[in-house]
Image 1 (spheres, rainbow, N blue to C red):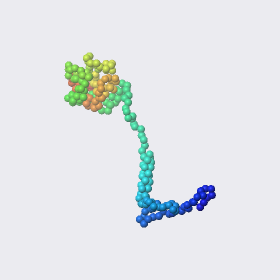
Image 2: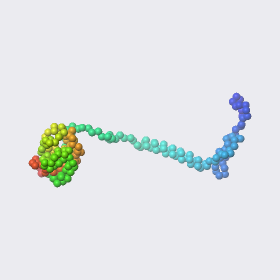
Image 3: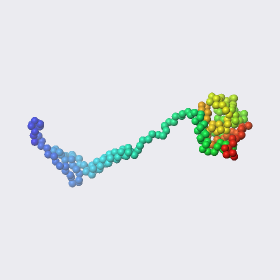
Image 4: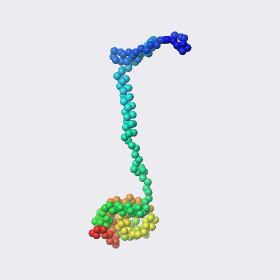
Length: 230
């Protein structure tokens, strides 16, 4: 077949597409696409193997697509309730005392706890304080001041210890209530002080510790009265 002006004038090979031929073993031979082209060296392809490869590829693609769709439909990104890094924000003295009062209101009153406190158990609690404080009369200061005669004493009660400005300017005395708040959270009770102590959270442990401090005070003030009058 010749098209004028399109094919060159030289000899043209008439092309006839041959159907694909199957061998006796069921293998597909790569048949020549034109007469005169030899199929010598053509490599047989196993139909079942080819189908398995193609099917595996298609299934893998479907699994990936379905997985992506399922993830988008079922997983919802949520912002964290709080930042990954906490930023400490200073609270006012009123807020801090209010929080301490609220925490105290959830359990027995301080007077009730002190009425049933154990100085012996408080001595064990004092081990948390022993690295920085001494308790015996006449003992020297450590990182923190000696705590003998602390109950009822002025807040900055020792002349031989260098208190922070926050403690020196606080004023007042170490009442049972102030001691309880201080032991629970020193930084919140007197903001700006230098005491590096996280505090004791259990109210019973704080009461036992105060009983121990009271036992090591020469003339302690009387215990507060229980609201119930007991």
